[in-house]
Amino acid sequence: MTDAQTSSPKIVTAAMLVIGNEILSGRTRDANTHFLAGKLTELGIRLAEARVVPDIEARIVQAVNELRASYDYVFTSGGIGPTHDDITADCIAKAFGVGIDIQPEARRRLEAHYEAGMLNAARLRMARIPDGASLIDNPVSAAPGFRLGNVMVMAGVPAIFQAMVGSVAPDLVGGDKLLSRTVIALIPEGAIAEQLGKLQQDYPDLDMGSYPAFRGGKASCAIVLRGTNKARLDAAAEAMHGIFRGMGGEPFENEIV
Image 1 (cartoon, one colour):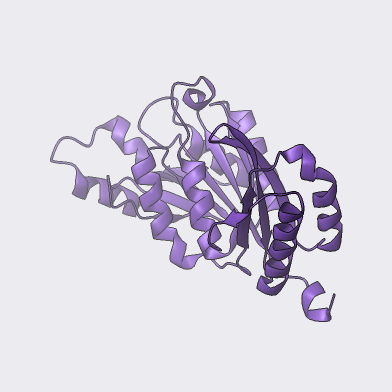
Image 2: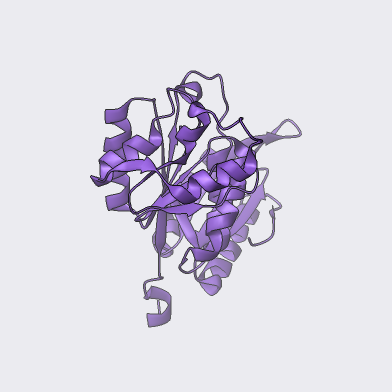
């Protein structure tokens, strides 16, 4: 490989921390991780890890501290509502070792959103923000999320979570975008395993994954190739076409994303 091929890409990483017993019990389906992964990919940020933890303070604090030390960005979802089990804000404050109290601007936003007399004590809990945190806009229901250090704390309701991601996206700094190509053929995965392994050795700078499925009742395999260097990606895809054709398959693929 040339120096250009082996030069290290700028990689920016993120982690997702999903908080809530309702996710672990199966009562609620997590849609936020899927959305975040796609959005971050567009921004040149790699979602490198996702965790789900229960509404237990020690578990949340531990996860936050581990993830914020390991990745450039951490996104959390869930646990910032008005009920007793919404403990995320307190856990973030404890993880950072700072205080927490009703933040004047957060309170102002809630007062502007609710009709007179409707901002009760429970709803006012959503204005409790850790010291030093900046607010994340919530154009859906006003109650803000917040950012402290590299941790962005957001609501669990998908519509609100997505709106909050849109609010912070302009301030996120990405790296080299990860490109991908997917080569598919009606060839069983086991038949190409050895040659795929050799192809990976030839292109150690690319990520390669194999995904078997059935198409029209026949075994098929989709090979997903990912990397930041388009020329290397194109060369590996062409080599994969050749492997499939050599086994009698007629490969096809989707577009680079």
